[in-house]
Image (cartoon, rainbow, N blue to C red; front, side, top):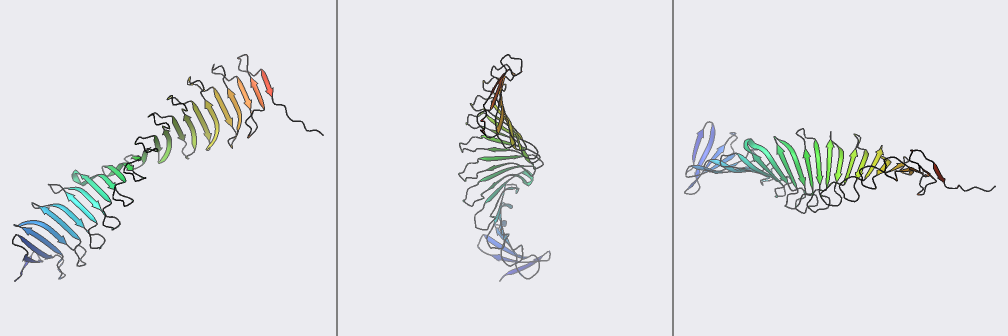
Length: 318
């Protein structure tokens, strides 16, 4: 014979399942259907099952140890299988959670919590291969860092850093897959303002690109021979190259200047051949031509051209 009890308006049935296990059944909403089952061993609650959406199917499972919840599973989409899991510490505080976002039976997201249910870390498997390819770190509920494994080799090659406001502040890249960062993208107000690149994997920045607020490149500094100091400067206007400066003797000062037409054609080159800090040769080019049509030189050092060479022009015969 089954025993039925009414406690606090709830109808429950107490059934002996095994010698050491007892099940209590509850109709929590009084609709005549059992929607919660509690399992006890030696008087201690060990497991709870519930039908929270009242469709007469269990969608809530909780495991207990010494009266405290240790693990819970939830069926949030009505498939009959758990798609969310929660794990608790000895004090009953949430430590870790897992989520099956697409209902394929694989848990693609794993969340890690600190005291007060504060989210600390989130790991995600975005391509469904069973391995995490995105790692996010949180502080006070805000993401501060995201690491991405975009080629799914098990190793992150992109790291995104965020301000407390949520705006991106920096992106670091390993573009060669050697495990070392070789690009740094710096952001201001959500837009990239500076990019630093280590092109030869020596651990030193040898190229820097700067952008204006519209996202146009305005200046490029580059160290072609890996000495650690920039030897080339390229200046842009509205995204078009307008001038290049070169330090050919590595004294830290430009000694060549190239000026360009709006479409990128070289129109004038200026040289400081004796490296005294003052130009002493000027070359002029037609658009698209590699050879100058006119050359001026300052041979006395007074800053004024005193020697002129001009390419003879072809004369058309009448």
